[in-house]
Image (cartoon, rainbow, N blue to C red):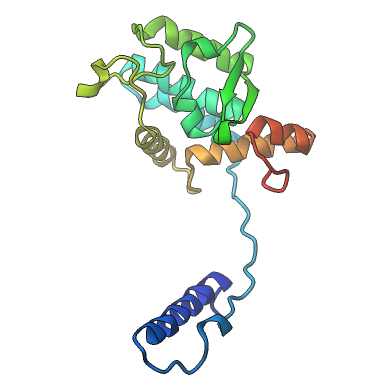
Length: 213
């Protein structure tokens, strides 16, 4: 009754033990290479309902007391869902990477270049945030707290954003786990549901392979 993943953990342990016996000059009843792992079932990402995603994106201005933090975090989440960027790409964004139309030039994994596109809604929230942020940093999303926030061009940490997303989810009573990567999945899922071409989604996500998409 074990899942294929649990079975493979047991089989991997057995294989490691047999290798250990050979390394220690003990007799091994069978060769470690004869222990074969079972085929695993493919796991599919679970994506929250569209209404839950919207509530999460709007959460900063509902739950944050600091207006600057609320505007920044709202702009962060709007940008993440509008573009499907990786969290590392999002937090490395500089102000000059966004043109007036909302197009953003990205240097992604493996130095692959691509453009992503902000919705008018996301562009509006970024404009509101920039108007209120009071910073000369080149980085788009800047930290406000901590001893390091005085350093020029300091980035927000991935841990901070993941923690905030988790906190908003808990405050909203959403049972399904949500992370920054979940919003990337949701971006692709909702594009596909609206009839977008898989090859176009692949380009927007920056995937090398269509199979990954």
